Length: 180
Image (cartoon, rainbow, N blue to C red; front, top):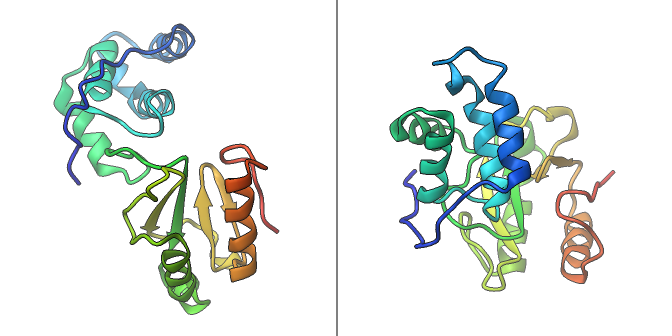
């Protein structure tokens, strides 16, 4: 996965985020601040509209006093980090094993048609980004998708419709809506 080109906007942690990152750093001996990298990347991603620009990656490296390549290696390895701008809601559909058996591909096709986008794309209004991901560890609740930190399980077209409608109507906060 490639990192999106610099968008021309500088990135700095907010005072609260910087305090949180510095709080992580003091937990590790000097020279071991890389141990705080994954959480620092999450914080930067949250502060940067859901994705990590080159400026954000470089700022994380500078803050942790590590090389930029060390940050890029981690950010490009883990799929939880978005290296391009994403929509307000990132719909991550599991497509492996049990989810596939339970109809994940059919539901993914349904969402593609409903949103008018392909996997990896964002709707023109910036509301939704659609992704396929590997197993999310909720095999007993297949098919499922993850939005933010929440799992949405035993998916059906009706549940997906309700979720999309609630997002568009502003009836939910990002990542706070749960399906049962």
